[in-house]
Image (cartoon, rainbow, N blue to C red; front, top):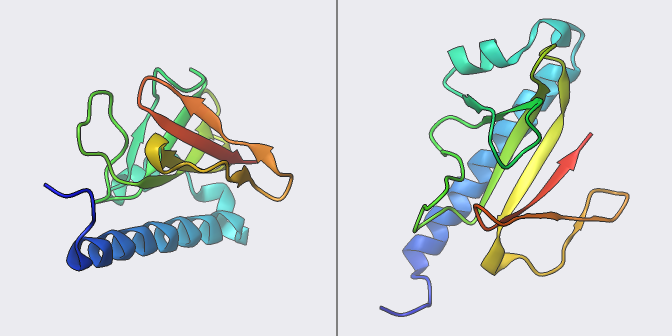
Amino acid sequence: MTSRMTKRSRRRAGAAVLATVLGVLAAVGALSSPASASVNREQLQASGWICVSHPFAAPTWTRCFNPGLGLPLLGDTDPRPSYNFLQFELSSGAFVGTGHMIRQDLYRGQRCGSGGEAYTFLPLIRFYECVHA
């Protein structure tokens, strides 16, 4: 098997990334509207989002991943190139920020957000992540 992606798989990966970005933007837009106080992780879950508290993340957070796109899992032999998520405080349910994860083999030193902070490496799942508060 060659390491090159076929034109079809590149197109499919690009479409998936675009769908992820659009989903996060739609959710963030909903969260920044006047009705944002009523948007929470339970409502996202009811809409098909996958909301979990991960052992590799701070135990006080819940992360919600776009429906149909999955989430990074320990031992996944064929993970997606990247994931986007919304983050909530576990105890209060308060929205904390948005996040982006890049697979380890694709990370090239990108900086996180407008402040230029470094991404954080999550060795258990082999992804780098950036959380925007």
